[in-house]
Length: 287
Image (cartoon, rainbow, N blue to C red; front, side, top):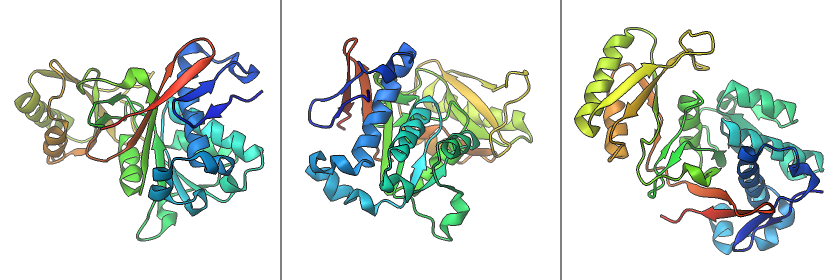
């Protein structure tokens, strides 16, 4: 029995079906919001109940050609739900090209039978029609921290290329102020002490006391991104009061490749909250 997806307001998903029984509780809302996104943006059978303003923004689903897929646990559910739709015979999914934000997502997408392409294959002026990804933190202005999975450089590259950027997340990711957790910063691997000193100076000047460390992998060696870079995890004692300015100033530092601050990108944000043992509610962030 497949879960029912109701795209009318309020948006609720029935999670009483057999395909929900073995899912860990913490994964239920992630799967629910991923399922909602697939129904909303990819399933032609639901076009007749799509909101009018959605049609005006994106046109018919048949206009989709290239879709960006994010990285992380919620994005993993997105890929799985797309695979389910493909196996149900969706010609809409079969004709799409998917560009992925990490090698991990490439592997998972190909395992589901999705047509994966590299961004280089999109030509000299690449364009992505729709990108969907999760988030680590989301503030009321839809500024976002992403990249704690280590894919921030590729995530931001693909999502800045997108005509339409959609964020899907558990409601626990909503915060009043960014910086509740760490901010990942993608940095070069040479002269890291000098890079860290400059990052600390900028962060302290703009946001107050910080601490930072280069992320390690399970072998206690420096974690490397898919592009061979290090990730610097920055912790803010007082949070981040001006993420736009901080992002701008960090990007001026020689050796900083990208930051996990996804600001002023105007995403459509959908969050999931479990109401009871049978229902998850999907809400859209208005900002």
